[in-house]
Image (cartoon, rainbow, N blue to C red; front, side, top):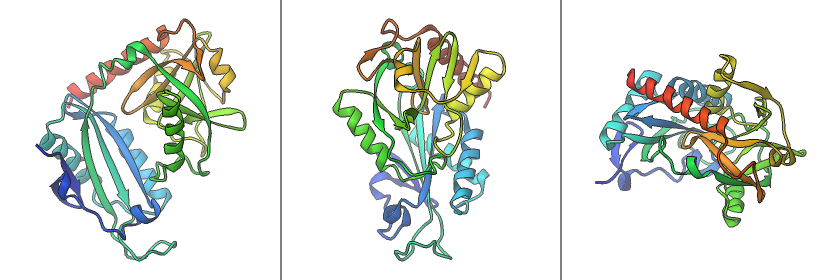
Length: 285
């Protein structure tokens, strides 16, 4: 059965979902996106996702294409129609259709598209084996805090990692790691989790936000500051977080084995606690 896609008020078979060549998302990357995990056929971390989408839209002056309540109802209907028990839903909002002009058009209607993907998140084999990362130069623009469609620099970084057989690229700037091409970067040293503080230099990752809240509630020690690739190589543990992987151990950075080359105990503990929290959230809905 064909995947069902939502596009501007309609649920369509994916092969029937078409956009205009004059859509500003296509012409300029003029839009934003979100990725929300699905656990037990329920959206999880949805409140934080709505908050981040609200902020991204406001930062580039795009109006909501519908009410927030209708938006969430649409996502739930999409999950139901596609029979997704576990995976993710991708959401994209663009400024809409207009003649090609760099300035924002005055009367364009925002375009809303969403589709789900089936994926094993809770029992990923990569959580047991760990993954590798390589460093790349951060080539992105200066408003990385907006979850923008402009992802060419991240694609280039991911391709560089793929050519080296790595799972992820860690982008660096001024000698320090900013973040992964599609993830937040963490290291662990002496029992303290270290990650870069929020600013315009990084995306405010939702999984990052949850982990910071866990630390604030006394679960573990957290330090928010920049760190270098050299510091990561010499760390006790290294891991990443994002919607599709939750918390994922990293066992090699630029070819250097981290610790004993196996997922570390704190990383395993954080992943287990996060999964337990998501299962509890899903069960409560």
